[in-house]
Image (cartoon, rainbow, N blue to C red; front, side, top):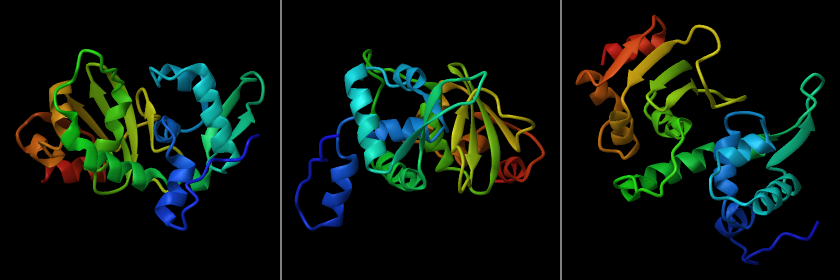
Length: 208
């Protein structure tokens, strides 16, 4: 494997960008925060990336200790990629970058792809506490692991088992939260988010 390119600057920011500054790398991290994924699933949720570039970025991430690849036992018998502990440490970096980038979202362009689970990180920034939260949108369902210290941060589809809170909202409300125009607490107060469940997270949201 060829050596990693470097800015050759004795600066921690430059060193970090040596590892994650290439196009697509942080978006691959965003997807792998959902847990182990097959290459085909990664490619499907990264519209616009070529197969060659995706394969190259994954090799770089393996080399740099951000991700690993392993083979699932039968009957799965497929290879999956997952973040290492070092790779998972990029969650607050992505959260900070997402918060900073809210002002750049604006209206959705006709060429913009969207996946329901891309709203996971903005919603996680709004949750105070720990537990599993299921979110239902017109585009699909996903679930969040609020306060998770290891394992997946979010996942597609309904929550496994009974969630601590179930949030039902429309895409417009979720988009407004993602753009920083509306907080989750405000949306609940205004009746734009339906909160169900008996868990601590559900009760705290209803009591705000």
